[in-house]
Length: 465
Image (cartoon, rainbow, N blue to C red):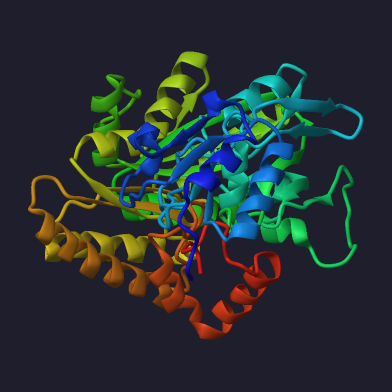
């Protein structure tokens, strides 16, 4: 696809749509806006425009559509697959200043927000009203627009689902500049095709989110965590699906290994209690009936020790302990990043029954390729995060090992019924793996959807499909 190269006339017109202190061109554009958090994909836009309302977005898109200029949307830039990187140059449309909370509707239990609102601000605003937005991605400084665009998951997905399950409605700007509303505050909607759900997870390739209506529920009155150590990883991983099958559904089931804990503890300068075991499950339960939660914890503890070969069960019952354990768990990615000069990530999702065998293969691959591959995962929902670390190896050797290693790893995952991504998306970096998995027929259908939304292919070109 040929896109128009932005010239002086385009710069003059585009800059007229926004205040000058929100318009940057050429050398004025900071390097941070040429990559996402992982940094494996890099390209500069020709212009970087910070928008503050949907009318500005509409005007910019109408002009870009008429002139056939490539447009890439960016929120906080916390993605890991290059989805917000403008690989064809053009316009980088920055929605981070569209950060207003518009309405908290306690009758309909909804929250209307602009796309640049941070996840941590959503939690703060709803929880002080006794309400709860359940999706819990690891990066709390991500924007809600980015979460929706990648259908972000997180640690609470096993009980509460992923971002898609908490979106009632979206207002979007289409590539031609027109503004449309998909869904709303209603609970049910069987009115035609689910256009809202097509936009969720489309990584900015179909439409630009300018407002979202989020589902809320009353906040659970009590949350308790259990830290369960095991003698080996196999016992810990095997216990997760059995616990879900035999007992009440946990909020989260996280798998931790000693090595990953050490990375995080060293990086944060904090230690979790009882940190001298080989493998752990970190369990979380919540609810509104304290006696019922206590009973859940009691049953889960007995099952772990009597049936699942756990060494012990430690109650994470104080705020200090809870903060220590979950902060260390939440720091895994940053800790691994800080341990190497470059990393690349695999966000594979598998049937729970295949996790142990797959991780055994990952360790075997680490030995065969002579490369460090730390990992951790949401074993409750089968989503694993696996990291290849460059350390001090030469660039050409690193690229060769990444190419071989990722192909072998994804091929193994696909043979187990796994998928390319559980929550980080496809973006630019993972397209070839998705193509291998899905095949031409499914890609043809996806391209048809893209063509219907964006016939000129100007919106985030080169991503996903």
